[in-house]
Image 1 (cartoon, helix red, strand yellow):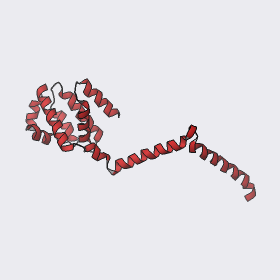
Image 2: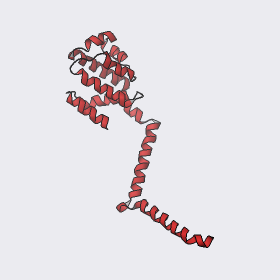
Image 3: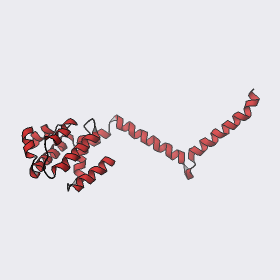
Image 4: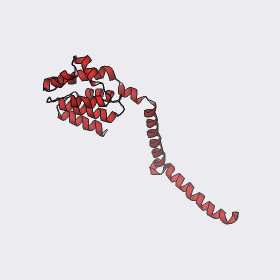
Length: 171
């Protein structure tokens, strides 16, 4: 949530809109990588950098490093080679063209990625764990804050008292 909030603020502050569609595109692409948070952050960084031009190979390489085939996508979408991208990204108009092509390519290649990722086993197990913790909290608090916590505490104390009483009888 913090990463998403920070991204929303950064993109909005750079004057980039529509933010919701862009964040979905970035999330879908990042979902296909091994380090989703870093890939998402890299996409946000290059977007804010592209606003004023100065989008170079160093920024694009951040995506490539995260497992996003940025050069292949841009070759397919805008027909530019790696060397041509370096020159194109120097101006605001060129950087905008790169980002538009990248967004289109990311949508084509990774669209729906977050939904697919949320359906995998590890995410399902994580969701189950969260649900179990919420259930424990709900049962523990119960009605009026007593719930099972109070019942278990009472039972535990009672059993200890019974043990104290029975100890002399058993020996």
